[in-house]
Image (cartoon, rainbow, N blue to C red; front, side):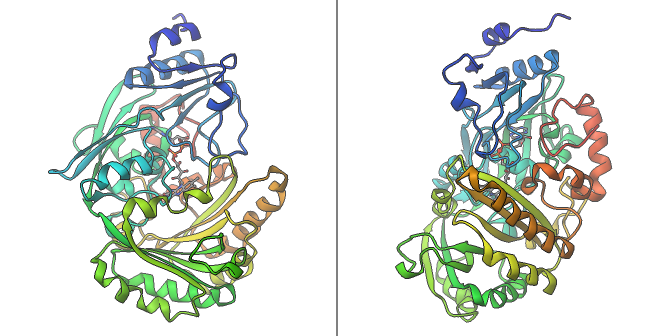
Length: 456
Ligand SMILES: Cc1cc2nc3c(=O)[nH]c(=O)nc-3n(C[C@H](O)[C@H](O)[C@H](O)COP(=O)(O)OP(=O)(O)OC[C@H]3O[C@@H](n4cnc5c(N)ncnc54)[C@H](O)[C@@H]3O)c2cc1C
């Protein structure tokens, strides 16, 4: 069969096809992680499913690498490649809410900012990421952890169906009723199985929340972490919460003399009755002296966008991650050694709780296997200057090597580094073999390999 040429691809798609000779190329080839500097042969800014089908066929027939990009937040930069095809879905970002059924259909290029903006009008939300610019696609396909996970499960637990273009160019619907094996794999298996052009989710009544940010002296980090590990086990599930090490940015609620100093902090999002927030937050006030705090009612989309100004596109990123069933004394010791050394204001370490509703799903019900894990830890190195790469990567690696022996073998695929491909079997433990079998069915030639790759 004759291979389609780039010129033919241009005539087949409605969206822009951007190659090196085009003015838009320099901007279009960039991904969120500024460390990634790759030069694809063509970037297709798809506008509909037809564009996606044509791009998949072009990459397959030309034997080129294929990257699929939603929000572009992949830290290892899987959303681009050298010399291959990039399917950029950013322009496919429509959202349609069904307020009666409490469901929503959102296209694959949506970000959580766009998604929450659309669902907030109806007083509805589902579990999503803590940063507005993160894409719904990559996040959902890897699992999805956020403020609402304890109450409503992972993002993938709220997925009702997905429209998928597979490696052979077919358009399939995956749900509990159709292509059930594919639907199972999409809920945690990452971008290994096809291009998801739209997602349908269950929504829940969430509108205005009460946020709480508490800054404690870093010298009291042990008290904060020991408090958190006990408190979060039994705290009401309407409480989303995580501890972090954080250099104080120059924000009005932080006394000026404290700006630039490192703190042990707790970030809280209360989705229960607003007037019970104070009662729920009360034990936090006894943990240690509070240097700065911000407790305020706000629309849910506001907390979702709260940290975005700290994290503009183009920072250098290097992350490492683990799951844990318990925050052991050994883990806390490691956090106390490396957390206070967080090098820059944008870098951090978060320990997300994945108990509550996340744990009520069976380990083999979706591809996301760690239903016994209580915590997802991420050491997120994010800094502006490439000249500081060595120093910052060393901080992440040293920190990770200290925490990892206190953790489970696998970690959350969406927080994994590019050098973590040897952990893939561990990341899926008992579900790995079934994922391989489904990969063989839907992508036997491994066209979709720019990801934490499940090899057919
Ligand atoms: C600043 C920041 C904050 C984050 N916060 C959270 C958080 O709160 N919770 C959380 O769970 N994770 C979080 N993450 C991790 C995030 O889930 C992953 O980076 C995820 O891959 C981002 O998805 P994306 O669509 O933005 O990325 P992209 O780079 O666009 O995509 C990542 C990968 O997903 C696959 N993919 C993307 N779109 C599609 C599609 N339509 N069809 C098939 N495959 C596709 C591809 O394999 C692609 O390489 C965060 C990451 C960053 C950088």
